Image 1 (cartoon, rainbow over the protein chains, first blue to last red):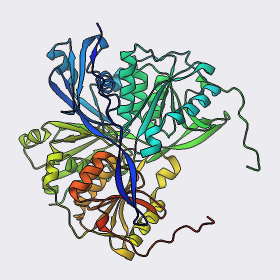
Image 2 (cartoon, one colour):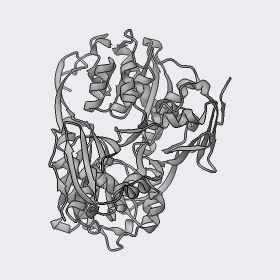
Image 3 (cartoon, rainbow over the protein chains, first blue to last red):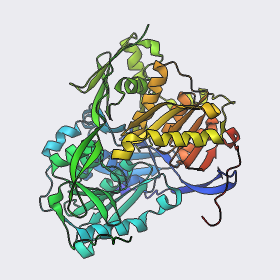
Length: 281
Length: 281
């Protein structure tokens, strides 16, 4: 059975008039954030603020990462209606099943106060990441180069986070999905939903985020089975502790030829030895 | 009646060993994020991930901004215990009152999925900001200079947001409170709690954040009665629309002598005309 989906991608940017420090009026692009209220079997679950570039995948990924839906097969339809800023998800499950999953709420961070249902932290003990997942230096450099070409909204409007899912296959590595959204959690949830919809496994993939390596990002990568995470930003203690516990490789401050490997350095293959900057530079 | 408070500030950073792109081991500082579960009259409300620099103010500000507590006088005690990573808030209100306030949950963004209870967006209609609040250019420059001296964690460990509350008094303007935390929402909530504890009014103040000008930041500034908000970062559409509706002045991309005024330019006083960069520069 395939999921019935709308394809309701929304305009991602709009232009507004602003004044600069000289009092001059200028037109600038800003991210066209909008509200999207998620209903599951007619029950209101949450209102997400999103750019709305891939709202169906976002809704599915949110429900997946919040453990409100166990399998893609449990979803019959995902229908976005921007007239009402809502997405109606129809499942094949019982209302009791949803009530149980709504369970008690744990609020985690990254943003400070993201939302997760159930007891994900306990679940981490049951997650096992593939030991063979390794990242070679050429692949990392290729990924960072490729990301630069995808950040269209960030370059024009700023104020968004970007997330990418890439294959980890040396010279043939490529970005499979790139999402920019006002919130990094929305971006990664959209990728999680896209992976479900396309039956994509995480074991031989790399997850990239412009955002910080927080506990929530580490947990969501692990949930998707992706053993290698690369970020342009830094790390927090909870992200560090969880990644160590999970055996996840975290590469932060990754720009140009530089990075810091916070955890899982055994998953890294230096090749070739990068040239050190010449003294005169 | 004064609130009984602990003073349980936690260590804000820790050092970990990492590998750089040359495979060399290095010691780096990271933000010492930890969980803090908030209990109100023995009822579990939320678990926040925070640096824990001012956990009592954070708990009070969270309850204030979520409208779970109406007045500081309703709080009898705020007691943080890092042994159990929890803060016990004791109120003088009835359990029914809290149940009612827990109401239905709206999840807003900034991070993508921050949490707010009740119907704050509707409340905005009842917020009125002081018309006289104005910002002169010298004060703005002074604020940006002062912020640089406060960002101690960001400079050493990165991966945190900073928020400041400053007086808006020309040459005598000063930062009253500066908070860095893993989440911008925690940082602004801590300032909101600090304002309550010290009976500080927002009308003649400036709110500064390193984070983006999202709907949640605009709503929280309005709730604190602060008419002027300055950010190092950009803006999202919901933040822009709400600020226009509220008559809030938003200054973004504010670094050195540059800024963009997104809304409320009438609250800005250019003085003196800033020197344009010389052609040769």
